[in-house]
Length: 91
Image (cartoon, rainbow, N blue to C red; front, side):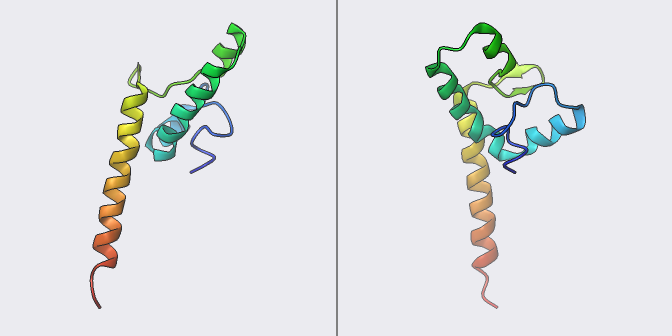
C-alpha cells in the first residue's frame, strides 16, 4: 500500500491500469494532504511544483483536502466495523 500511495514517487504519468490501483488504495488519500501541506511550506520554483503536482484527481476533478480526509475516515469506519464484526463472533 505504501508503494502505491504516492509517498515515495509522484502519481502523475502512470499507466492507466496503475492509476486505477492507486485510486483504490486508501493510503493515497492520506498521503496527499500531507504532501500538499509540505509543498505549500516550501519555496519551490514553478517547474518543480508542476513536476511534483499534488492532488488526487477522480474523473478529471481534483479532490479538496476535506474530501480526501473524509475518504480516509470512511475507509477507517468500514474496516473497523468489519474487524469488530469478524472478531466479535464467539466460536
